[in-house]
Amino acid sequence: MKLFFHYCPLSFSNCYVLGTDFPLAGTTKEREPREAVLIDPGYMDEAIVNFIEQSDYRLLAVLITHDHRNHVRGLHTLKRIYDVDIYAVNQIVLDYKTILVRDRDICWIGPFRLEVISVPGHSPDSAVFKIDNLLFTGDVLSAGLVGRTVSSYGAATQMTALQSKILSLPGDFTVLPGHGPPSSLEAERRFNAGIQLYEQRKNQRRVFTVD
Image 1: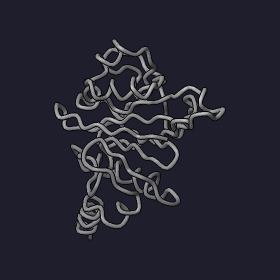
Image 2: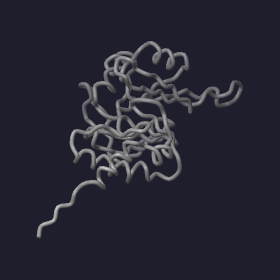
Image 3: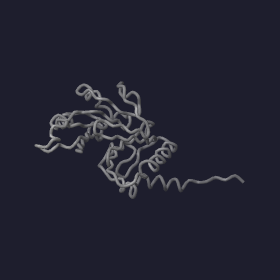
Image 4: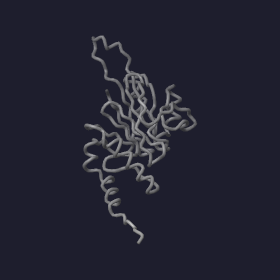
């Protein structure tokens, strides 16, 4: 697979295009179609469209990790150019009807095996998309950080899901977040400051007893 990374300066977010490998000239696979999915169109500009068109990709789907404006703003432009399905935990994203996915769903989108992992907390609809050894984590997990939440309940919900569904995955994966640089799951298990701070605060909470 080939991965195109695009930083969206307008929304300070990452957009990804994941495509099939280019087949070698002269082989039987040369005639196979090149297909791709796009993750989190925070902003659609010429660089993204040029990559898709110049690579001769057929765009199969758009994956939305969560419905926050800085991750979906580019949908209007994208839908004017490509007639593609939108996969999300929300039924409606920016007035567009989606293909609704749920926790632990496994979907085949062309050659891509997509596993959906729900990680609520940063937002109710936050999800991680697992494709092969790649984790598209949106805002719930990034290099050294975890997603911001508005309450201790949200933080606990997010951390429980991260620990039980993401950090516990066997082996190592490439973490591709909605903001910041890529990382590895092993690095985040060992060094993520957001996880360490949460654990420290949890251990420091006072326990009140009644005589």
